[in-house]
Length: 149
Image (tube, rainbow, N blue to C red):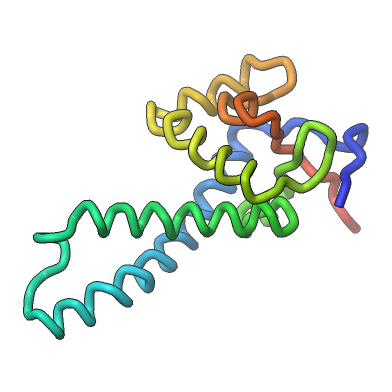
């Protein structure tokens, strides 16, 4: 689905942070369920706590769940639930929904971009096109959708 870029506006950092907060709340619930699916059976079968012996595997699993969340939503309409609530949409430079490989690439670039106190996101305040560092690296953009009646 292609978006008319002439109608799209650049969103504020606060709007993007609002969407990220919504997604974090949703992801917290998803991660609690996902970790419970692994940790509870492991504990019942072995009598041990999973994180003591397999911390790295558990962290990789959690990262995979988070990546799957974003990749799924970005490739199916370009919006996570938080982005939908804040009327944001992720698109390619030419206005289309991104594909799986680009979504994975964007997720991987977003990790260092946001991990360092969000410096990669704050860059969008000064960027003429309103692009964050991970937007630039992947030739994607987050746009503010017009209000619907």
